[in-house]
Image 1 (cartoon, rainbow, N blue to C red):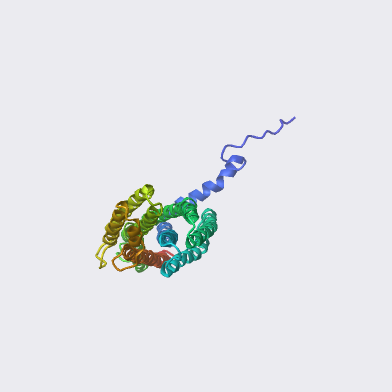
Image 2 (cartoon, rainbow, N blue to C red):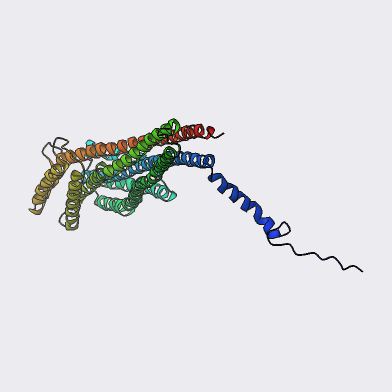
Length: 444
């Protein structure tokens, strides 16, 4: 009787071991990869891959850096223009209030010129609100601007009531004017200030995004270093100094890298110089104009109150001091003399006229003080303020145009550089592949 057959367990690592069967493909692939790198053709193939990736890395990161900075610069350009528009809207409203208040002093039918100026300011403000709301970034700002439109209409209605009663000599006209001024300063101007603050914060964030694009330049440098390393390895391996394809790729990457770096670094420099130069001057001058115009309203209210306007005179002095400080900041932000009297000198000249008005009123000659405040003669307080206002508006227009133009130009340059880097990166990858294939053919 024969013994039953026995089956020995398969030894580990044989075909019968499931674990060995699962690990065999991975081990085989790794082995083939290691064996390939042990040969010159395998190393050439790996070097080709590194060269192509280096070229594409430079092209793509150069494109992202340039296009990203271009987008940030366009955002800064748009938000800066939005901020200037918001402040100009505020100036139009404050100017309308100052004109209406000053005209109220005349009594009866106000001067035609003053009425036309008031209506022009109010019309400009009414037209600016929907335009700013349409370009506002965020539903909150658009909603705030919508409420401003309604508040401005209420303000205009109160001024008309004050005007109608003043024309007939009714004292209640002053009460309507007070209500209009309170509505403007407690409803409209604080809302506009909030919109201006949020817009200013966005401009600061945009400028920060412009700087962040410089980080991507590190990857551009990495691409250049990697391609240089491939060339050095190939020269040592083949004992040939020049590979035409790699040399062409190196030139393409060097040019693309330099173009991207110059545009991105230059764009960052432009953003910083604009932020501390024309943009800063625009914001400061516009704010100074608004404060000075508000001070002009306080001058009129001091006279309207006839002996009980001390608080308005205090507000005048506070606003004027702040305006002078802002004008000094604006002057420090821009270089060069634009010619003519500076806004600071013109504001000081108007303040001197105001001091004369206060001297007359404090001396008991209220009629003479009102006449001096409402006069339109060439040497009057009104003419002095108009000279300041016109010069401040001109400064705002000049500096805001310079800021917007410079940001726009830098954005265009960055976008062009982005495409140049991408095209040269792809061209470099093609040239590197062609150059390495020449060496690979030698082993086939």
